[in-house]
Structure formats: structure tokens, C-alpha cells
Image (cartoon, rainbow, N blue to C red; front, side, top):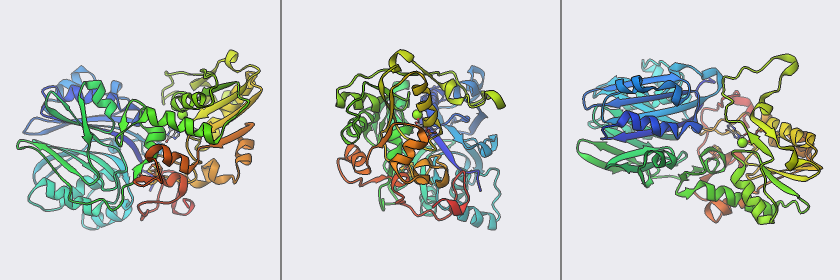
Length: 468
Ligand code: 5GP
Ligand code: SF4
Ligand code: MG
């Protein structure tokens, strides 16, 4: 089962005359969380309308489409998936009819008992249109008989395990729901009195909404004709907020899990410099954009010059057709261009947020060295990524992770052809994030200590046997 892995962003607003347009803007700010499909569902008190397509938010929607999305409430979704599951059927929001009328749902996260739930539902005669675990959530809500939607959602929460931050829309209600572990972020804000929810606060900033708080782990927030209510039917067994949101995935201008991401990333860089200094460094350069805040912190801590030694092109779409054969491997060159005057004859420290397979990093080392750098040292502002994620971040199987394949830093440096490589320690990461031992956070991709057992072992790129 390869088709169920999503990295996503969600958005919702209730009781605003410009719901669809605000949803469009809110999703635009979450585009980094998913670039393959985008969708918005709106409701006007009577019915739910839905429009979704493959593509970027700005390409999927235009004024004519937004005009058809009438109503005063909206939920939206952006999705990234692995290649195999890149179909419109898996795009979100998902919509169906249930006993209470139309209902639409959008999901960020990944269920760990996906296959079990799907088999159970299929055995009971449920039909599925997609291979997405989000449809399972929708069916669990729709199929469970209970007097109120809130009760149905609470019942779903006793069955679904793993990571889910959800927005749900009916004819007259909008719900925001977060799994009891709190893996994925979800924040609540306000615009002209209307409640707004979004994966990241950058959405709130763009539309001019004020930030209020996180949707709490295990919380069901409901906005409807009767006003706003909030309940926590499930208490958190163990908080497991995804530390990788703060390392790489979220935008630096967002507040995630109550912390400003840019501040944390800069501090990861400072801590990295304390742990893994390069005393003879001439210049510190980031791998833009994700490595930039950490490189600034690293340079500040060592009191060394920071410079943009690599320039990122922002015009490389996912649809770019790579030339075949002789001129292949253009990927990194299209995305990053070296600045020779920054690199020539220098001892260069290249700072990035993470290394996954190592293929990009190796090409970056090549690129920097070919422009005359005397030494090239890679410094990574997170610990070695050694384990796949089963909670909604796209990581490959263990055998593809360079830090799992190779035993020592020297071997990794060898494969990257770098003079040295250094990572942030797990302890250092936790000191920055929480001032201590990592309580309340998931760090499984670094430690292999999975906070929620992976019942149905799958990952987007691997079968059950090669994950551990
Ligand atoms: P590698 O050297 O492993 O090929 O690539 C490392 C780069 O991938 C880093 O710059 C890092 O920012 C980026 N990266 C890390 N995690 C992810 C992810 O989940 N998705 C994408 N698209 N890039 C990632
Ligand atoms: Fe986040 Fe890593 Fe945990 Fe996945 S395994 S939820 S990426 S910290
Ligand atoms: Mg990067």
C-alpha cells in the first residue's frame, strides 16, 4: 500500500462573507506544505460546495472558480504526495453525504492503523473512492451513529491512531480537530470576529487575522449557529509534537507549538556551532532557503562572516522536464547556483537543516568545491536522520537514508566528498526546543523511538520489512 502518505496543510474559517477568497489566501501561505493538489470546500448554511484540482493554489483557483464557492464558511487543503498517489481522487477536501447532510474533511497527518481500519470498513461494506487515509476518517465520522457531530468525531478519535490535524465542514458548522498526541500543528485565530484555523500561523498573518492559541491535542473545536464550543473527549496519553516541523517543515515566520520557528532555527545553528565548530572557517554559507536561519545562528555564534554562497532559483516547478541521458542530473544546478567570489580559496562551512538521502548534499559539496573552495565542511542543524516517519512527513526507507546506511561521520563525509560533516546532537536539539529532555516531542526519525506504535507498517517508499 503505497498510496497513503501525505504532507499537507489545512485551513478553515467560519462566518465570514469572503470565506472562499480568504481560504484561497490562507492556503497560499501554506503552499510549502504541499504542491501537488489544492482544494476548497465552502458552505452557506444549506449545502457544501467543493472545488479541487492537481496543481499549485494560484493555478488551481481563479476569480471565476472562487465565485462558484459561495457561502460564509470554508475549509481548504494543500497536498504533497509521493509520485504514485498523485491523483485527483486523493486530493482534498474529501466530501460525502451522511445522515446529517453534506460533510467535507481535510487532513494533515498519517494514521498508523490505516490498513486495519480500511480492512474493517471494507468488510462492513464501505466503499472507497481513494487510497487516502483521510477518506477513512471521513467514513468513520459518517458511519458512527451518534446524536451530534461532535459525538461522531469523538467516536472516530477512539478508533483512529497516529497523526491527524483536521478541518471538517458541514452545511452550518466548521470543526477543527487535533489528535491527542498533537503530532501536527493547528492554530486558532480570528478575523473580523470569525474563527480561523490553519496548520501554521503564517496563514493568519497573511489574511490579517490575530493569533489566539493552538487547537489543543485531543481537542474538538466547533463553530456553528450556536457559537463556539470546545471539548477534549480524549486526554493526551503522551504529547508527541513533531520536532521536524520546527527543524524543516514549517515556515520560519510561523509560530508552531507556541514557538517562533525562526528563533528556534537560529538557535539550532548556535547550538550546532557550540557542538561542531569549524575553527578555521573563512565563511559560513546556508543551503537556501531551509538552511538560512541556522547558518545565521552558526555564523553569529562563531563570530564568522555569513554570506550567500549559493543562490536559489524560485522558478523551478515540480513539472520541469529533466533532460535525459548525457545532460541529466540537472536537478540541483537548476535550483542552486554558486557564487564564486564567496567561495574561491576559502574554507567554507555549508549549513543545512537536514540530510536525508545525501544526494543533494553531495552535489552541493561538488558545486562549492568546483568554484574553488579550499575546504568544504557540512554542518547540519538536526541530528542524523536514521528512521522513517510514519506520522506524515515523507521520509524514505532506512536503506535510503545515508545516516542509516553508513555507520560513522567519516563515512558520511566520504560519500558527500566533504572535508568533514557534523550534526546537531539529539540532546542539543531538545535543549533548544524545550530546554530539556524532549518531553512532549516526537523525535523518532532521529532516535527510532516511535511514540505511537506503527501497527500497519508501511511507508511511502517501502514494504513492511525494510523499515526497521
Ligand atoms: P539530501 O542531501 O538528503 O538529498 O537532501 C537534503 C535536503 O532535503 C535538505 O536541504 C533539506 O532541507 C531537504 N529536505 C529535508 N526533508 C525534506 C522533506 O521532507 N521534503 C523535501 N522536499 N525536502 C526535504
Ligand atoms: Fe516528526 Fe520525525 Fe516524529 Fe515524523 S518521526 S513526526 S518527522 S519527529
Ligand atoms: Mg533544504
